[in-house]
Image 1 (tube, one colour):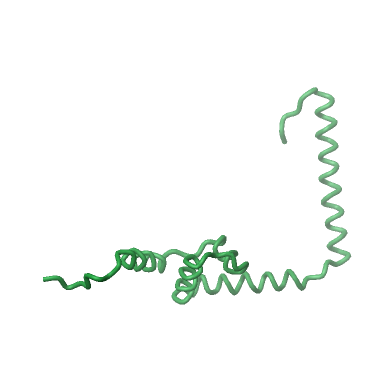
Image 2: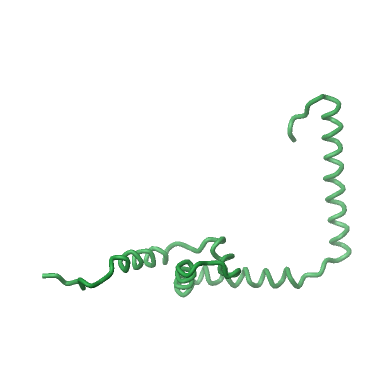
Length: 112
């Protein structure tokens, strides 16, 4: 005697299994970015949203990403920031010149 519905589509079982397993796996950063950029296909979108309904950790990650993006967009570069950038670029240029001089002197250079 069968207890199941014989009209049930086998894909329903697969989908239920994926959703069950999805409860215990956190959403990848790549998928979170896809959610933010609205680039997920319909299935990925449904899986991500169903996971977010159940997982506070991933929900907080989405909120953190949103807040970080907003903070970065609102940030204004200061004169102090510009000075730090100039110093760092200057040091990179110095190291590059030192490396090129060593290369010319030896004919070959080991990578730093």
